[in-house]
Image (cartoon, rainbow, N blue to C red; front, side, top):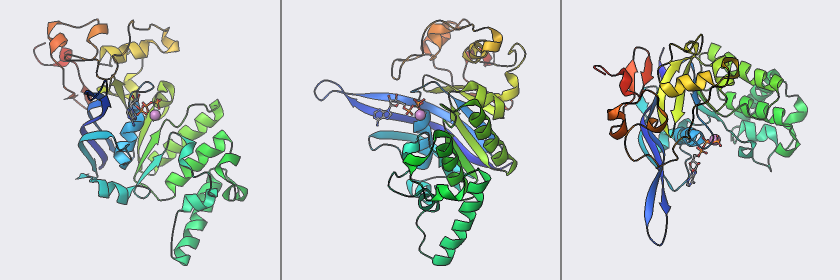
Length: 315
Ligand SMILES: Nc1ncnc2c1ncn2[C@@H]1O[C@H](COP(=O)(O)OP(=O)(O)OP(=O)(O)O)[C@@H](O)[C@H]1O
Ligand code: NI
């Protein structure tokens, strides 16, 4: 299967001005590596404020002005420049944004889904397609004429999903698509992703909902303190979790209600708090001397990835 997204060693940081002219770098994402293939759902699981939306925005070239982006983002093997991102977005690469605020409040739903098209014939064709997809997502013709404020939460999510699919994307990045939705709407939303996968679309599902991730994803990337610490297979989250590698991933799994809420003590270091060493050092039960001062790299282990010295040869 061809890779539709390759994120290699991406870091995102902000310059913060402290007292006077003093500045410091706030690193939100460090050295992030992941990939998504055609017909695959990769979930990225991270807590609130961990940089999930920034990752999505980096892929689309819509980071805030004051953000520094380093590393490489490729689509189908070709590294994307800012111009490439602008060219591809809303076409081969589609974003399902976290917030309904991405919709233009002053524009009718159908008009913004279709976007600006000069040619009359093309516009008419697109309109037919828009109606088909909207219909498929249970959005009747009356919705076309509505403004965003008239939509219910569930309808708004469906508008965002159908608008993303209108351009036949090969890669869909969904930023936190399920929070605040009732169970039925969550299930519906997850089904949309299953259908995209069947159609060969690669999906990057960004979420803090581990249940949603486990229900649809093929692989799951775990964020900790701005680092990806493991990319596991969804099926590894089963049994005693014995196939999970990183101690943090194991503890996350154990904390699932079905496994009796065994939470790990401590907190995730905030951005920029970790000076050196492993970001999980202070909480880790398996740590050894080396972990204190040296930072493990994300390494391939079969078809998984792990950032932990325990899994390095000779340890
Ligand atoms: N324009 C900005 N200037 C400075 N710092 C920023 C800016 N935008 C984001 N940040 C920092 O980046 C962090 C991550 O933001 P982001 O929105 O990506 O988090 P998230 O994982 O999507 O959170 P949530 O789960 O709440 O959506 C924020 O906590 C904030 O500290
Ligand atoms: Ni977010």
